[in-house]
Image (cartoon, one colour):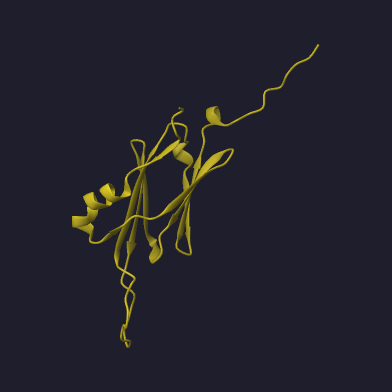
Length: 132
């Protein structure tokens, strides 16, 4: 079996390791899609403000952090609160098939989109066949 370009880590273990310092931990659910030239990671992180998203790539590990702040409730009385505060944390092992210098991210409407471009050597290409 070929090595995967991106490996999910156990989200509960990673979140528990960080929990004492950060408060309540959530593991964002992700979709990982492979395209011809890149890997697309979509992470659901509702309640996070764009400035509270932190993404790091170090030693082959991609980590996603996002802080969920309490919603302002001045002048209101909460009847039910199912939405919690805390933080999101998730890590992935990334193979050398990804061009780490070109990783990019966008956060919009509670969804983090990470583009992980493949290095040229692993991109599929068509081989021309010469005929006589």
